[in-house]
Image: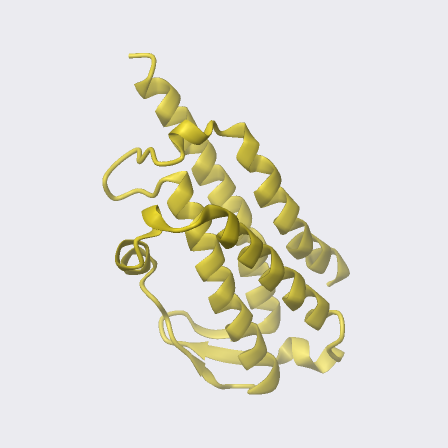
Length: 157
């Protein structure tokens, strides 16, 4: 579990440190209307981490409780991610993840078997939750790299 916790924490630096690879002039580029820009991905990461923050605490404190799903695409559209502050969102992502990491260091071993019932995914243990949010960063890093590749192709045609 210690290795997974460190990977979860490392996700902060992995996500923030990859951003300079992408020219800021392309952060609003969308490879397709139904795909997110880098800026939208950054805002999604903050909102996703806020949901993760609450879910983690529900799992630990309210074993077996229900958690709601949310429509990430509606959040991106209706919360106008394209108009939000990137720096504030990155800092929120960083603070929420660091705070949760510090909490996870303090819990007893039996809490790792606690779970919640997700409206769409069903039973999620704390271990499952940790793996999901550890992997989440790298899924979106890959997505940003794909966006960058598409942007470069569109600028060389």
